Image: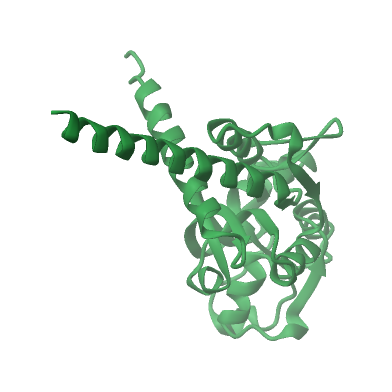
Amino acid sequence: MHIIVFPLIFLFSTFAYTAEKSAITVAKIAIDIKWMTEDYPPYNYLDNGELSGLSVDLLKQIYTDLNVDFNQLHLSLYPWARAYKTLQDNPNTCLFSMTHTKERAEKFNFVGPIIDTRISIIALSSRQFNADPQSLEKLSIGVVKDDIGHQLLIKKGIPKAQFVFLSSGYEMVKMLALGRVDLVAYGENIAKFQFSKAGILPSQYRVVSVLDNSQLGFACNKKVPKIFIEAMQKSLIRIKIKDLQKFTWPKK
């Protein structure tokens, strides 16, 4: 009997030691990661000088679930084009919230999904445009460089000469309202938030065409250790399951 028990005790001790060592490794990587985000409300944005939003809150929950102090996290807000380039060039970086595409999944490791997203071409209601290629080729389109709207339009063959590069979604909707661009290509939910912030009513703009339906996620440089990516993904699943367990149907 003792011959059987001893190996079992040793085996459980080994598992416990391995799990503890993995947790320490994940925690160290988590603290060292340089996280970047942009002004992309309601998912990530500055509110009275503090980074807020659904994605920021979710990242905090993941770090808490991994037993890592979120206050030790290195988190900076950058313009999207700068953050996207930094993510490609620096091995110890992650960026959110990023729309998942096949092309981006080949460049980065994704953790997600955070939430569904739809990317569309948007115009003022007062201006009637068609979504056919012949109509689009005559129009100026406001985009954020390397944002998903920009990348999807490049994929559709829209030439560079038609793009008006702007620094943020808020600047895009303002330029659209002023008639400085004919169209904008952006995530619908974020555009709605920015239109509201700019005092532009829903009746004053419309979706011309949908470019893609996808999901938002956390994207990390391919050199970020796999053990950290897997730990984050498992943590996200645990959090989502807890949220589902809390869900109750509204009373009629």
